[in-house]
Length: 322
Image (cartoon, rainbow, N blue to C red; front, side, top):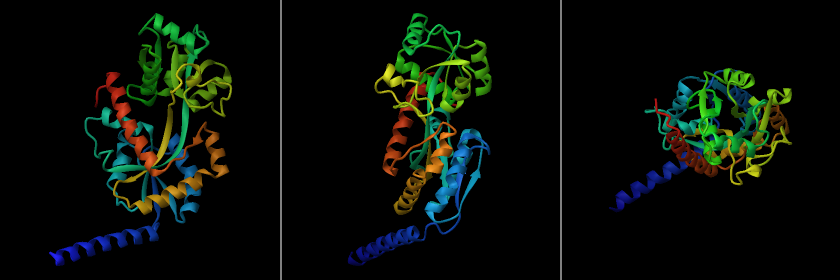
């Protein structure tokens, strides 16, 4: 028995020292930030703006690796199945928390195969209506929607898209029922909003900026907890109607779940230093983004709560898993 105890203790000591050695040597190779989208998109922009500064703070070489496909499941699966040594990092966003309810099967388990360890950025949504729509305030919008439940058409970039589900969350919180008109993409949805074919759309601040600057639509509220620096005159939905309401499109870093805590801590520390860089903040601001900070524990707790919340919303919206 004593011999077995010594053997077990020795294994534990070796494992501990092995983990410490890995953390001390990290990074020992090139670090890949896997973006599960093609080049040129919003997440790709964030990754490339982030990578250079991140490399300086991490003390190694960092590259961006685009692995698009299947609603980000290709890139996510690649990271989930990679070596848990911190050299392969996923940059993905809030739509990842939709996956358990939108897909009948996934090549990974979000709760056991990967873990979020750092936030990077976020941007709010803006409720837009056609210029001819007879509502100039959020209260007027709600009154019209309640007077004609399920008849006022709103557009999204497709069933199960972030635009669709974010809008469903807002309608639920406001206590209104709207008529969903899905489009094959954001551009087509925006065009029909301008033409008056649909009356409302709930899109990111970046997507709304051009039309707002041109005065071709009306904005009724913004989804962030506080007013946006990019749209300082636009009241938040929280201050107008829903005191506890806050919703943003966010981006975070994920690693395989078995990645050692000391490696996670190094990535987290380098991320926080990177997000403090004024030049990066300016780059983000040009796209309507702001940095978002948080500890690995905060990121994990938030991520799990978001999976639970969106699963409920998706089921309530009647979206069938594919």
